[in-house]
Image (cartoon, rainbow, N blue to C red; front, side, top):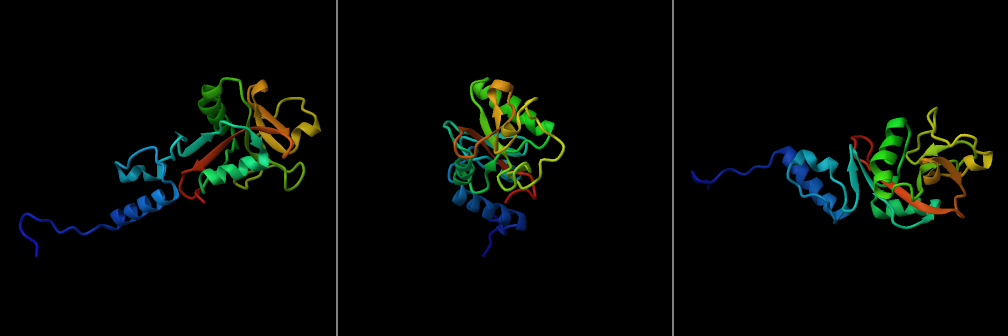
Length: 184
């Protein structure tokens, strides 16, 4: 029986969805970077040790591994993560100027989510989209340097270079795309 001092506590559909998402988030990502203060922040929270830039969360590895292992490691870090993409100039500048350079200056190269492993010379990004017209290849690369997995080459201002998928080891960048419709 409700008294004058008590309120009828019925949950709105939005509050119920928010509560469910919080529970699911903690189950899949127990280490959170921020506390939940506003339900509208939920889609943009990043796991601990990841950096949020815009609608994406990024993770810079502190160790080197092969391209194939880097891809698996991203998924192991977070079930929605993949190697980072640079499909256009804005994404490339975000990775290089806002993330990689401030963290490492020009001391480390990083794998990104671009390779031709399924079909030689037919590059696609880790989200499944084709290379298209945009690229940041180092000028005058040989054909062998435009195959395999792509790194942001620190010796060439983080422009792209292809490397062997198993023999070459480097650092890597993972991303979680938090935009609506892009989460796996």
